[in-house]
Image 1 (cartoon, rainbow, N blue to C red):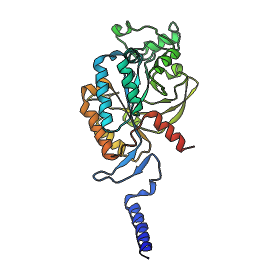
Image 2: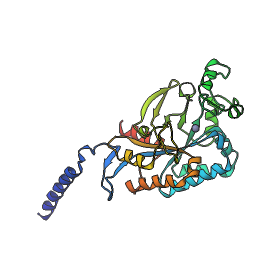
Image 3: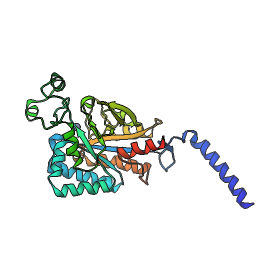
Image 4: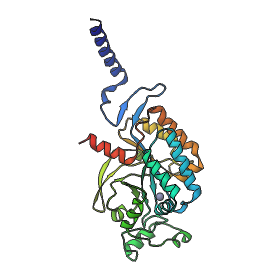
Length: 298
Ligand SMILES: [Zn+2]
């Protein structure tokens, strides 16, 4: 009898709780209503891309990356590390760095590629376009680029060469890049990136790049005191967006140089995530997020 009474009491409690919390829309798998103390908490799948840029593949920046990964590890946040070819070369030529990278991958971080095609200054030297073609020249001419930078560029290979270099860092599935329509290589499956606050929330979307099927998420930049496309995105803006009613995964991107400039900014964001989700099971890599979400919709 006592059991029955308790059971009905529990059902009533759950019902009242649902009414109070407005749990009617909590069936979504990507955003679950949850109370966690001092905020009107939500837990979303989230990812954090770090783009490793062509012009700063050096010891100093590698150390900044090392600190960034250490910080993420302290919060059990899994990062998606996206390397341009000069970074790949730097890592491949140093046994200690290769060991570190495999350790990071074992810890659950993802390693992928970042490609600056002909429409970006600086171009990373890889493309499937003929570098003597008008198409290549048009793409290069569309972006202002100082002669000191342009003068250093040289053709290094096609996108098969790019992927073969990248595969020396381990199994890779995710790329962020420009010129996807001509340079998206075979073997890369997932994409992300973005430059606006509204890009922070997305669901994996099937797109066709260069005739290949790609699942694309998007992300917003978190940069220290710097505007991107005329917009300054603060941690407060990102928190409000994260807590908003919009459904989807939450993505951010930054560079090792941004971290070096202001590590506290990233710590602030990780603290916020930790407050939302003390278990930190939802701060994942891009490939994990896409793979899990395709499983849940099968
Ligand atoms: Zn870049």
